[in-house]
Length: 322
Image (cartoon, rainbow, N blue to C red; front, side, top):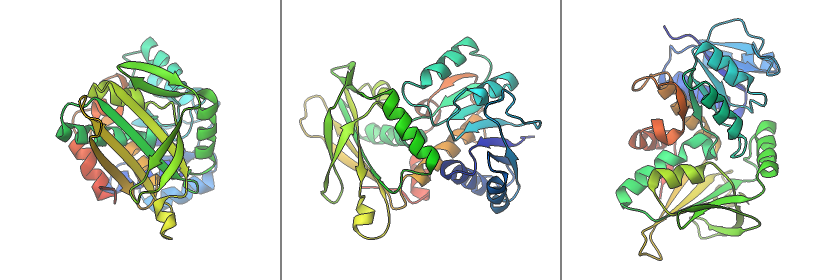
């Protein structure tokens, strides 16, 4: 019997969205919505049905909890890694989405010290890692690839709640340089401006950022040149007067091509549905609800998620490829 999935930050945008998807896919899956505000957590739990609410104290190693769980999802920053240690001590799958590229180092060390304690999914990628399998599916159809360039446009009104804003500010302070792969070598680059051209032809000023998507894509595809450009501003959806949207430009090229193939992944409701999907897909795999349960050790989304299935789920939640 599967005990309750503990979602730290479950009343926030990402956590509650993931909980809604899991409830839709698995109506009988027990969920615990955990947060600092019990009333808010209870409202989310009541809306879901078949869920409980709890308060947690991330300053305590036991999180202040007494009940058993089947997995731990850190939909907020697990600043002292008490959520991770709680999962490792109990042999529970653990998923995190809020550690920046530099901040995953403690998670990596914690797992290296106890590699057989629990499955640990580091999903601190853009939109909780859901983009990576989607790109891998495009690469599979494209063939051998030398260059992968990602350009993401996030609407300035779609950053998320206070926790999301705090994450962006912390990541920028921790890794002020961008990470790129050039001719097979990873480089840190500073103050390297970039322009992201959107589907409607608008050129938006962005910057190269240090994000875990770069090594994930580089090592999964073998591409010698990988970059991730990020622009924040008015999205195409808001320009049309229909609300903030999310747009990701994906450029692929072979070694002998100056121009290759361009795809766009878009969602009319912004980043929240994709981030929620990334979390839900991770939980589904970690628990073995689809496929075998994931073995103990450190994992990233591209290592455990099936690209065609991810694309299917993306389409199901309203995302589209162009």
